Image 1 (cartoon, rainbow, N blue to C red):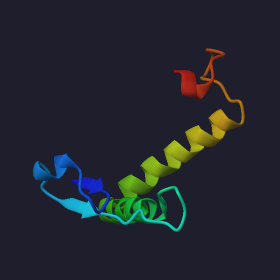
Image 2: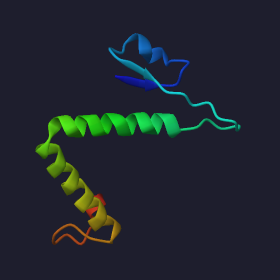
Image 3: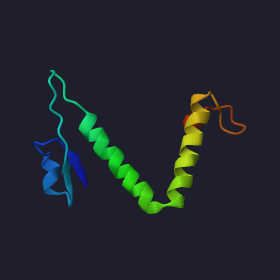
Amino acid sequence: MLLTDPWLSPAAESADVVLPARVEAPSPFDSIVAPVALVETLVAAVHARLGPAAEERMRAAEDTLHHASAGGSCKGSGRPVWAS
């Protein structure tokens, strides 16, 4: 699966599924709004498809993130969670 801009990456030739997302914006910079919305939609669909196992895994990942951002450390190591 390839997510790309409308001009298509050369990798599109090798991808089974190509999902182009608009990036044009009325500014000198590309917009990431459409690509991010596409990724969030894919994550939500996979999460729904996997059911309770996905819910538990997401909860564990969020707990780890919150613990690390609060200055938590790995059990007994003194190292931050993200450094393990």
